[in-house]
Amino acid sequence: MIIFAFVFGYLSLLIELIFFHVPSVANTQNFFKKNNNYEVDESEYITKIYKWPMWKKIMILAVPFFFINVYFLLPFLYFFPNLHESKWLVFETNNWLIIIGTLCVIAGRLITFGSMLYMRKENKQIQNSFKLHVSGIFNYSRNPGLDGMFLFFTGFGILFPSFLIWGGLILYFFYMRFRVKIEEEFLKKLFKEEYLDYIIRTKRFLLF
Image 1 (cartoon, rainbow, N blue to C red):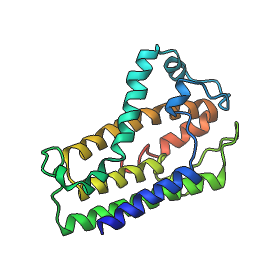
Image 2 (image 1 turned 180 degrees about the vertical axis):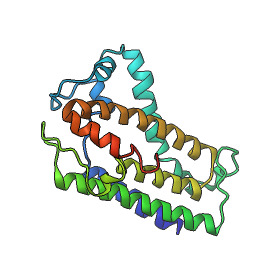
Image 3 (image 1 turned 120 degrees about the vertical axis):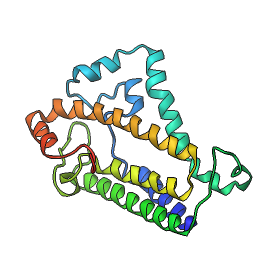
């Protein structure tokens, strides 16, 4: 079951990134080299980030981005038994945790993959052709794709309980929350009252 969770989780993630990736205005590289596809006037918050000195961009944007990508690979440490004795890599689990963790991995990937397919079907985000998604799963959360990713990595945290994986999940959450705030400022500028009304009636994430 653990192997199935690995194969299903990471294979579906790879397919999503290659074939169904949805571009983001909060992409880290956009703040090092501006993406001219986004011609909407930036908010004061986004403009402020663009004006950060290089050292600040590296420390706040690039360094966390690097560690997040390393975090994505941490579950693969399961395949290196000689590391399991480390106090930071305690991979002790039981059958119930394996079942719960696997279900979380599957559910998380289905939520994220489904939301990406929905967005790509409705709008391919070519040049300035943005669309505000407010129906379907987006009626319950403004960021269902992230909800799915949080559940996905929570599943691996349950499958392989370790300080590194749970610590990485906390870092991932706060980093993505920062990126969500950037996207929200962009969407406020783009959709104005329509997006403000959406904020009022729909939570940022599924649970809060």
